Every structure is written in structure tokens, then in C-alpha cells.
Amino acid sequence: MEVIPGVHQITAKMANMILIVEDRLTLIDTGFRGSSWQIARYIRCLGRSMEELELIIITHNHSDHVGSLAELKRTAPAKVAAGMADLSGNEQGLPYRRYLLKLLHLPLVSFLWPLDYARPGEVDIPLAGDEVLPPIGGLRVIATPGHTPGSISLYSAERKLLIVGDALNKRFGELRLPPKSIAINLSQAIDSVKRLAQLDFDTLCFGHGQPLVGDAAARLRVWIEKRGL
Ligand SMILES: [Zn+2]
Picture 1 (cartoon, protein in one colour):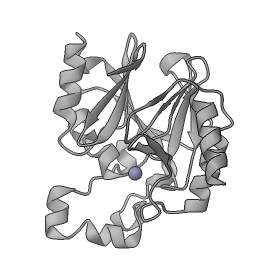
Picture 2: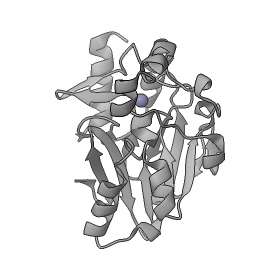
Picture 3: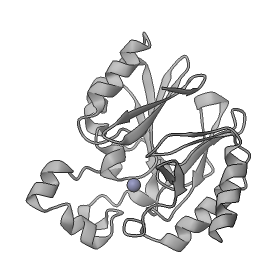
């Protein structure tokens, strides 16, 4: 689905990926393992090719956002950018609550939701926040820790577009904070959302749920106020 001209949302297994279509292609997040064929098919339907995928940006190092990274890297020449605070390099340091990490190792769970994560060696551009990446004339990286330590959001002032990964999500038409049980630090997550609400944007894209289109910043501010955050 095209959210605004040149910015598409692809959804696979309830996880969203954002594809920015310009001279070159940029993908934000990669979905669960096994989603690469859907991404490739979407790109083909636009009359473009995986060879044109130049950059993959990861909003945070959770399986439903990095699961297809290894598959994509086999078929696309893309560089990978991700928040460095999520890149511990070992499973014990992954940005999951400890009980979730244990749960993800149970046989049936690990079969249904395989634990995939980006390792430091797979990331070409480690991000700390405040970098400006090339897509859409300058896509600003905003550090939005809380859901994970290295979560980032991406902002285009020119297109009034904000992409938040799991800093926020939308379920049943309602804005929501990341679930307490998954967020590494909920008060930090709330601070991050409040900082995002100070930006000027019309369109808000999430890692899960349909985008919020039209007056999104104002609607986010109303939501924050209503929730008393
Ligand atoms: Zn997540």
C-alpha cells in the first residue's frame, strides 16, 4: 500500500516494513524470517528490482523487524543501518526482557517465532541518533529508547513523515505504547514518545498497525494529553 507518494507499507505476518521508492530503494525493517519473498514480490510489482535496494534501516533489533535481514542481504546489495545500542553481539545482551528471551528458546515457541537478531558485523552504519540518512532528501534519525535501548525513529521534515518502529503502535484503530512486558524501560519509552510529539508531521507509520494519516502530530499530542503521560 502506498502511504504517501513514494512511501509504501508492506505487511507480512502482522509486521510492517516501509519501502521508500526513489532512484534507489530503501527498506525500513525486514519483518520476521521468511518475509523476503513478499518484499521481493512487492518490489517486482513496482517494476523495480532487488538490485536497486541500496539501504536497509532497522528501527530496533527484535525478530519481527530483523528476521529477514540475512535473506535480503543474499539478494540485495544494500548497506544496513541500525541503532548501535541494540547491537550487543551476543544473545544474552539482546534487547528482550530476560523471561521473554527464555520463552523464545522453548521448542515450540522458537519454531513459531525464531529468534533472529542483527549482529554488529552485519551493520554497516551504526546509529546513535541525529544522523541524517540520504533517503527523501534527508531522513533524520531520532534516538527513541525505551522499547529497546537502541530503538530509532526516522523523520522527514520535508514530507512531514515520521516512522517510529515500535516506539508506538496502533491496534484496533487506537494508538498504544509498546506493551509493558516487552519494553525494556517504559518510562524512557514514554519520554521518547513525548519528544516525538514535538515534531511537525502529518503521517505516522508504525511497526505494527495501519499508518495514521492526516494531522498525525496533533492527534498524537491529544492522545498523550488524554492518557496523562
Ligand atoms: Zn519490537
